[in-house]
Structures are given as structure tokens and as C-alpha cells.
Image (cartoon, rainbow, N blue to C red):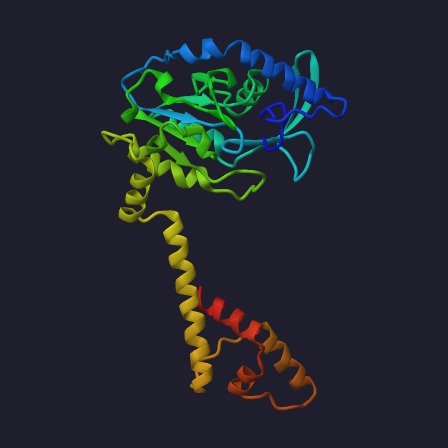
Length: 306
């Protein structure tokens, strides 16, 4: 949730103006965070799941990784939440990244999946209840489990009590895995693009990664996977390149004035009928081809190549 003071605490206090409700909320959060710093420093987290220590752990971020939330209904939204924090009501508009539910369902077949967010529990829980109705993610961690550092919060993976060779974190912010950069996968930030395909493209790599003896360094293993496997990105680029080659070849033939077979389209038939009604001779196909605009020629090429 960018610039969302419910989710992310502002680092500078504004003293010259009367604080808003949101700023008062942040002050409360800051107070309780300072009060519990010593507890957080020695806090060790255990993952209590049926398959604990038998599979690798995949830690998922929430905001801008699985969803995007805001206070205003800008660029559309998928659902609206009434969030109560410190007895105050906030309306939060949430947009879900395409493919989230299917992604978590498949991921849970290969990993012990943990949600770890820097957001508040009062906000994160109702969001997860909606996007993960089958409770594929069995462990949820919130802001209080994060480690304060200068300029923000990070997620110390050592707190999970698992060997780091078996722990992967997916987050849109490098700050989140600052302590263990080799365990982090930096995913593209999600805001409102409903054509986003990141989760679908990432899943095959994660399934492959779950079978490796060590997930580190995640970024290099990802490049290795892309090199050794033809994925949808490469397939798409190959298709675009193929189409481009066809068009370039056609343009070259035009420049060399080499005749080629012309496929009749609906405009050709209309012209012929009009000329017949007017008692005029129909032009030769090659003359018609020279009169076509570039757009018409491309359309004919595309139809003929299907």
C-alpha cells in the first residue's frame, strides 16, 4: 500500500500542523513499536505446520506483491474493506494481482508458505481471508515480527528457525530481505495492471526451485532456469520476431519491385462490383496491390499468413 499510513509508518513527524487521524494512528503505532523493541529483538518464530522441516519455506509479501491497497477508489478495485485500528474506521480499496488464488494453491503443494507483511494484522487478516479462502497459507506474520532498521523495516529470515538454504522470500522491496539478499526474489511491483502475468510466469521456476538442495542465490538460479528452459516470455518474443521477419521480407519485396501473389480481400470484391455496375473494366490485381495503403497490405499479409 504505497503512501498508506495505516500500513507504512512515516519516518518524520509533522509538528507544525494539527495531526490528522491517520497521523495520530501512526503515533500510536510508533509508541507501541518502541515499547516492544526488546521483545522483538529476542523473538524467535516457529513454523507450526504439519509438514514443518520436510519442505522448503516460501515467504510471501502482501502489499504490491499479492495486492495493492489505497484509501481512494482510483484505477478501480476488487473489494472494499472496513478496517478498524485504535477504534478508528478506515475504508480500504483493494486490487488483487491476477492469478493470486491459483498461485497460492499450487505453491502450497511444494512449499510451506508463510505470509510476512509489514502491515498491521487488523488490515492484513481480512485481506488474506478473501484472497486465500482455503487457508493455503497456514502462517501469517505481521509488522511486529519485522526488524526496525534505519529508514524502515526488514524481515530477518533467521527468526524462522530454519536453515537458510531452505528459505525463499518473494517481495517487491529489497529492503525486506536486506539481511539475507541471497534468499530474496525481487518481484515486479503490482499496482493496478489487470493484465499482469508475473505470478503465472514465476510459478514454474518456484516448482523447480523447490527440488534444489539450496535455494541460494535465488536471483542467479532464476537466470539459470531461464537459460535452460523455454518459458512464455521467450515464446512470446519468438512469435513477435517471426511476425517482424515476415513484414520485413514483404517490405523488401516491395522495394525490389518483385511481384507476389495477392490474396483478395473484401475491398477488392467491392471495387470489382462497383466497376461492373458502372461498365468499367476491373484493374489487374498487381495494379490494385500498388494502390493499397501500408495498413491494407499488412492486413492482407496477416490474413494470408494465419
